[in-house]
Structures are given as structure tokens and as C-alpha cells.
Amino acid sequence: MEKFSDQHIIDSIRRRDDVAFKYLQVKFQDSIRLMVSEMGGSPEDAKDVFSEGLIALICLVDREDFVLNCKLGTLVYALCKKTWKQHLEKQVAVRNYHVRKIDSSPDWDFTEETDQKLYQEIFWECFKQLEEVCQEILEGYLKEISPKEIAEKLGYSYGYIRKRKSMCHGFLLKMIESHPTYIKIKETELTLDIE
Image (cartoon, rainbow, N blue to C red):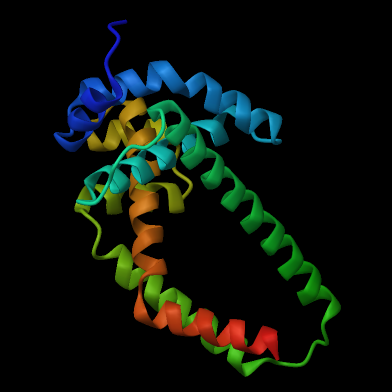
């Protein structure tokens, strides 16, 4: 494969040139797969982490004040490692939540039920703001339809559906996390945890 300078790849990313993304995939995906597997992840996890890392890279590169002050490979690796660590932290948080839920008293918690309803409303509000193709892909996954069936139904390749699902999922999470109501709930939970 042809060798490109880091700046050439960054400029290509800004132009959304497929060559840049193929280059990044060939050059760095194996090291990300190794990192994820060494930290207990599967090959599927590694694909998702790599895709989310690329989304984070795109967001960084698109910023006007972005300056590459290390090797591009180091940046890609750092973004993917951060993504995987956040995923692991969420898994631990979910496990801890379930343990706390089992250990806690069975009393009915009005605030928890209210928060769950708000989370659902936020999810669907953000979901409806996604591009139609993202909605169709994610809806297929929510209904536990296989990626192959989703690809056939929408007329795309299996690889495209997997890659696009990861991107759409990333966009949805960013929208949810920046939603004003979601931020208020998280701030309230943080305040309660401190007390």
C-alpha cells in the first residue's frame, strides 16, 4: 500500500476521502484488535472500537483549532484505547448498578422510574433526529434482525451496515449525552452521590 504523510491523511479525512479511511484501516486496525483482545475484548468489540475511534478522529480533525502534535498512529491508538476503556467502565457501572439494585431494599423508587421514563423520551427524541438510514439500521438491530438481513432489506453490503451501525450508534450517543435533560439528570445523580 502507498505510504502517505500524516498531514495528507488528515487533509483527506477533512475531505471525507475514502482512501484515507482505507489507509487507516489497513495501517492501524490490527494494533487496535490486539489492544482490545489483550484487554478482554472480542474481535467484534475491536471492530466497533476502531469505528468509534475513527468517529472521534473525524470530530477532532474537523475542529478549526486542531493541530497534530504526535504521530497519527499514536493519536488513533489513544482514541481507540480511550473508547475501549470507557466501554469497560460502562460495563462495570452496569454490573455495579445491577448489584446495587439487587442489594437495595425493594421499596418503590419514584425518582428512578421517572428518570427511566425521561431516558426513554430522550432516546426516542434523539433517535428521530438521526438520518433515515441510521434509524432503519439501528431499528433493525433493536429488533434483533441480523446485519445480513438488514443489508439485504436496505440494499447495502454487510460490511457497510456494520460500519454504518457503529457510526450511527456513535452519533446517537453523542446526541443523547449532549441533550439538556440528560445533562440535568446526570448532574442531579452526581450531586446525590456526593451527598
